[in-house]
Image: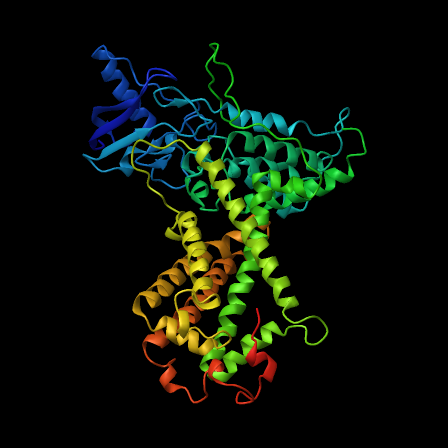
Length: 258
Length: 279
């Protein structure tokens, strides 16, 4: 039988995008130490329902750390105190009995609160859209070993592709910059042979779309610490380098059809 | 990828915070975007860093002798020798530095504005993990250094408050006179600590901004920035401290001050340069 824990929660409540929000003090009693953070919120919501109070809205989907839908600020840290862990994978045994836990939604001008802890992260989709397509040969599948990729390249591309787009980097950034997200999405394709034809166009478009919505990078490194997938700051450096290259290369490609 | 949740009502999409402006021809278009501005900030930072380091090393001549440091000041004006007009090359450097300062400050100012426009404050206390004191105070140490720059120029280049005690061209005398006042020495100490803190983050950050990233050397970047900040701090702090300690002092001086000499007494300086130490 596992120990049960009690917590004092301060949860952000906000009825709608334009409504003023405030913190609600709730007690979360008798929580199993094996419960995940979201399961703890489920228990709290059950109790609220029994008392005829509207449950707290919070974003969640797969609950196994791969979809990137969940994510709240826990005690001032994106996804809570555990490193490389999404909120759904954060377990209550990481907290002490009687702890006061403050829960707030992601905050950035381009992440407007929809309700309670749910924010609209669609600007990240705008960045992905700006990336466009990649040209791939279709028809009969080619041999798997027809396009050779060095192991290190495949690995660094895979490291970047681990980004689940949860938005913790933007939430953790004191400047609300989306550099870590954008650079991961760029690096994922920019190092692979399949990503080369549209590399420069994509880099330019995604960076400039990012800058329409988000702040600027001051290289604090908070994003990396908050990231549930430990996306490296190195990708930001690669993005900066590729962007300046793109500005030069796209000029020489300008004579060709856009 | 995360499933994004967007309200289905008439509010529709999240609006961009800013519109893209019409693209200027290269390379001006680089300066239109934040990533490009950071690039320029890093490049100008390197230039200014080079100046700060050389300036500190050059000033160490003061520990050789009053004559050596005054000589060094003269040599800077004579850069380029007899090939070009006197002080021309020095002015080229000065104009370049002023240009770099303007770009560095303007890019910092506009990037800061962009970030503030994008940021929404948290209602509860944030718990920062990676952001250190230096990185979070860049926008405060920067203005402190700018104010100090004007103070430093007014103090030792223009001689505003030294008045009659200021002797143009006698570096040793002016430094000793100026920093012997405790408030002035304190200003130098505080400003140079701010400068070192600024460099501690800047000299690391510039590699990221320029995209200079190689897993083999990445670990050395922190050491480089710390070392550079430390060396510059030590060198620059030594001047006010040594003046206060009496090591750099008019009393220790064996050669007469530049202004009190009519001709020939300061052997390495030609007569004309002693009499009219222009610009």
